[in-house]
Length: 468
Image (tube, rainbow, N blue to C red; front, side, top):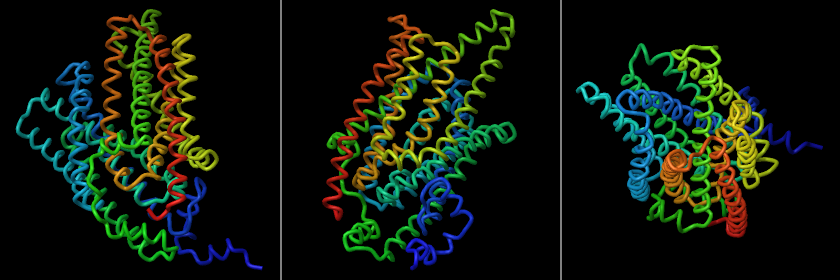
């Protein structure tokens, strides 16, 4: 008697027999015919994040050269306001052109901006002005390109396929962050800040080509796929590539309970994490001052000591993120599903800040933030894409763009207000900021349960009317 599974493997394309295909199956379930697309998507987001992490250190260098550190808090507020108009423009454009043209035009726009920054440098624009403009631009660029990429990825995959394959796509994002920093570290002194902008722009140009290849490949596969009539109806809609229906991203967010809860979950997540980064900076500084007082290092060597602590911390976070992404994320999604996997990060954050609230020691803050950041950058980032698998195409592109840009930056603005009030009027120390985070995480958990409830409702609704 023949084994159906073996028979299926015999019929699968050459891709299934390849070493690459076998390697992917170590980390998650990959069906025959899926490996190439998931690799291309992973490579695409790898290049996006490589570009961002080339530009991120340049942004820091320019803003600190021409301005004081406090200016960053105010620029986040400016960024949040500008993003309202950016999201509206993105929503209007997405209602007029197809997804592949949308991504191409948006990416070309950002590439042209990088060329313009280089021209402004050649014209002798003061660093003080350039730093402010570039700081705001990078914040908008990062949120927009990643949001539109995940909208595109959600548009390609079904809910079942997304839960299996998103961890592999997310792996490219994690590795890209490491690669971008390494490229800048080794090349920035020889090439220069503004020349590195052109390097980032070249990577973005490759992203346009990859998006075109993925789009054509998946459209052709959907057209040739022999499935039931209901699924074919959905696939024909994608093949036709009609522009999205009219309507703004913010309108979609406030119209849907599910999206509204996600928006405020992302806002609170950002508030908790950014407040935690303030706590970490404060504790790092206290540690350095204590070491100076004991005579272990000289005061003039404080910056080097802090850089050593920071580099060690980031290295551990990056390694932990990769291990979690490779070995745990796909299994967590398989065992717990998208809904209950949402609870992992808030419970980790709750335990960490509860511990810090009773004593913000260096060791407690160090390992609490390692666990929080590595889980955020791996599992939670994957979930932030997977949550949209059950939404409409308009919500995948427009609402996600609104949430991943404005609500993220609104969280940064809120943290600025919290830190200002806490340090200026309330005499908060690290322990009190941690206690405040515990309270915010409890609200975050409530939002998780509300999202779980709405996700279940939407999934059941889709199951009853799959053709819509």
